[in-house]
Structures are given as C-alpha cells and as structure tokens.
Length: 495
Image (tube, rainbow, N blue to C red):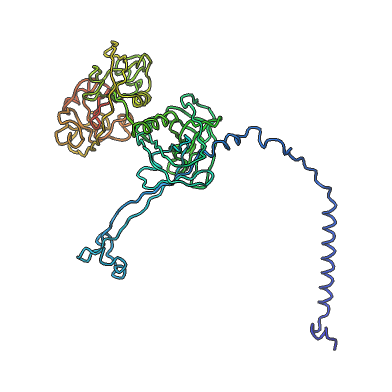
C-alpha cells in the first residue's frame, strides 16, 4: 500500500486541494507585492534644519527662566492619639503589638496616630545667595522643606520668614551656581499682556502654560487678608503654587497662588498671582526685620455704591465711605468720623477701598498722610500720622435665636442684650438690634446683611430697641441705609 495513502486514508484529493490553494496564495502575494512596488516614490518638502522651529516661539526665554523655578516639597508631623475606647474596642490579638507602653492600667490602649502631611509646590530663585520666594501655604507649619532645582540638585531649605496675610514666604538654600530670575515691575502690567505660568503641577515636572493677564488689582475674594492679585487665564493647577508668572520678556511679574475651580480641583481659566512688587516688599521686610510691619490708619473703608451715594445725598459715587473708626487710632485722633467720605489721600483721588487698604498696609508706621474728606456736604482736610498695626483678636459668632420682629422683608431682629453682645464679641455698651434670621433670597441678604449683624442706625438715626427700629424703617422707605456692627466693626449697608 502506498505509504502516503496509508497516512491520509482514502482522501488524497484533500492534499491536492491544499497544494492548489497554496499555489494560489503564492500567486496572490506576488501580485500584491508587484502592485505596491509600482507606486512612484513620494517627494517630501523638508524644513530647513537651519531655521528656527517656530517663528513665535517662547522657547528661548523659557530656557533662560526654567533654571530659576524650583520644586518645593514640605512635610509636617500631625500628632493625634486615639484611645481604644474611641470607636471600636481593640481586639486582644492586636494588643500584643502595642505592649504595656500603650496600656493605661485600665485595659485601655492609646494607639499612636501620628501622621506626616506632605505638600508640593513651586518657588522662584530671586538672588544668587539662595533666596527663594514661594507661597506661605506651601510651607506653612512645615518641619522639613526640600528644594529641587531644574538640574535635579536637591537642598534642604530654611524658612527665613513668612507673611500669612499676603501668602508670601521666603526660603533660603545654601547652593552655588544658581540662576536668579529677573524681577519685573508688576505695576506696569496691563490687561491683555502675555502671561506664562511656570511650576510643577501634580509633581509631573516643570510645566509651562500660556495665557494673558485677565485683570489687575483683584481683591475682595476672601483668599487672603490683603489682596491685590493679578488674574490670568494661563492654567494654574495644584503644585503651581509659588511658581513664576512671567511676561514675554521672561521677567517675574507674580507668584502663582490660587484658582477658582468650582469643585473640580483643576484650572478653569481663572487663576490669581501675588504681584511681584508686593512679594518683593514682603521679602525686603522679612530680611530686614524678620517679620512684616504694617502701617495702620484705623478705618474700615467701603466703596461708595450708587445706592449708598443716594442714601448719603450725593449725586455721584465718588470716594470711599468710612464704615468704622477704631478707638485710639490715628484716624480717630485726626477727627475722622464714621460716615465721612474719603475723597483724596496726599492729593490723589481714592476710588477703591481694597487698593487703599493695600497701599496703607505697605507703608511704614510714622508716615504722614494728608486726607480730604466730605462730611454733610462740606469738605474737610486732615493730617494723620500712621501707627503700627496692632494685633487682631478673634471674634465670636452670634448664637442668639430668640425673639424678634420683621420690620424689613425677610429680616428678623431682636433687641441686643448684654449676653448676646458678649457672644458677638462686641462692647457691652453697644446699642442696637441684632439680626436673628434672614432670608437668603431677600433684598437685604443680597446687599450683604448677615445673621448676627447688629443694626445700630437706620438712615443715620440711632436705634436701640425693636420698636425704634420698626419706626425708623417705616420712615426710611424702600431703600434704607443701615449702619451695622459686625464682629466689633461697623460698616454701611444700602438696600
């Protein structure tokens, strides 16, 4: 018998068919190869290797600036001890790992819950001596601060000083061959200027983002005590804090500080930077005095809104209204009163309360200012000598919920008593009615009135009881001007 047949059985046709298909496949492959090789070669137009990669590239200035921007990692130990009585009881099996050191003798074990909190941020080298500017919140409370340069060198940093009110901190490293950045004049920055943000977002490494300056002099955001931010749409993300915001000349104009993220945690195109001029002033004082010393006028300034101007009988919304004057302050000694409208400081018109606070805070105690004010339609001149800002004390929140009368729509008040005044942290001699409840959708809530505020005047008429308040409101009409005491400080609120 044929050996092949014995292996394949009685179906030799299968083998023949296989050879036939194989031959067809070889023919098809050959055909395809022949068809592909018949296409003409592509003629490519290649860029001249001698030309720059981009006509409008920021690469040259970025290469100069990158060595000035550093990564900052900080850590601090948080102490917390939890007894076995807190939460679930400790299983006897686990007690052997704590021994008798954690046993208080009553079968209770104190488990150490110390943890180390770490933070990542950025910083900017501003001098060849190793001084670095960053945000205070990057190193606040840190026991260990490490700085990594762009060339991967790592150094332990010392916190020279910090100012929480402006969120600026100064660090120092002992290193050689540093590349300090050129510090620009942030007062010359204009809306529309190109802005480049450099930092180490999410710890991925040095990153550059581009945008423009969206606004200058941003304040009243509640981010810091003293705010004069540059706003930019250059993306700023976690880890960018303390990094450089530069212009198209590679000059430092700000320190990246904060973003508005609407809960996403990432950039939404609204970022804020501390101006370079402010950061430099803080650094100068830290290096000279070890801390920041601020001048103090002793007033609570408020912008004059159209509603407030109308309530004061003024035709235009000019100047700044004095919402409060602190006792024993330079303003008090100069005769400034609550309700005065501040028109000029040293001959220059004032129109922005936040800018006034910023400029005075950065002056030196002992500086003399010439003020022009408006009181009851008559202009007055005053000379005031600024003092050093005193330490601030914390105030308590209101907890009074009893009694009340709704003389204003959506607002409930009660007569201020001694106990409530103490809880509010205001002088016991204060007279007025306290806001015990307010509808968030009401007109007064929209104007800024809050629960716990003490209303002392209605259209300049003092009120000390609910009945006096009701009477004053009935005479005031639909647009009352309220003098409100909030945490010991007075301010005007116009409906």
